[in-house]
Image (tube, rainbow, N blue to C red; front, top):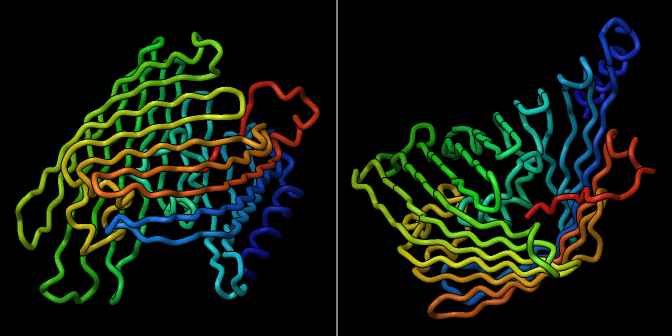
Length: 361
């Protein structure tokens, strides 16, 4: 806490003593998330559990040259309901951010909400999104009139005597010249050894390739507000270097998303091989995706309802059905996100328009 106070004082002094820097400005952001996630699972590879808590993530910093260059610091505090304060967790936020009309980058420890695309659950499990809010590494983004692309590296674990080094590189992009679009996701997930590791512990690799095509009928469909249909190919490559052989599970994905006013339906289907063959042994140390993708047939249907959805608040409740060949499991979620920053505060009296705060999942 003393270090944070010293940095804050330095930022305020810089703001006061450096009038020569063009368009210098104090920047701030406050993000609050409340989550209730009840999982009534019987599928053997999953855990039946409930997550209930809050997450508060304040940031403050300084921007120069019309805020093209920014340095931000802060933290992200997660407190489970019914627990004592020492059972909460605090992650440091500290990063440099560059922003131009088409290109952005961040370096350091920064919020995952900076991502353009919400990653599919076979890449990023929703509980990891809630409890690991920051990316620790670097992010590069390009956004044009007909599409976007982004790539980041997330150094998830530093090597110690008891902890294995782990990092993930994720690339995503989409090109949409009209109602048809094409895109894909690329993932390299690396789990190294710990320091002075026993001979039985070996380096493990996980690659994911997911090209897809889709149809966006949102501007053309009445009375629906949005309708998208998407299908893709999912290929994984996993190897335990101590064994040496590659395991190459593959499958097909299909997705339907429809929304009308404050209600929506999202259906995701997977048919193919077990995408996480090492999960029983290594768990989320290696595979960051939803453990349901160990099933050869998996369908997830989300039926959701928005209580609020504007530029400041996104409050959504959903009932999710997880279907495999052996089980039908149920999940209920309530997620509320409130965000306010220096830019939205300046526009607080503007008409609402179509700006809507993004959900974290």
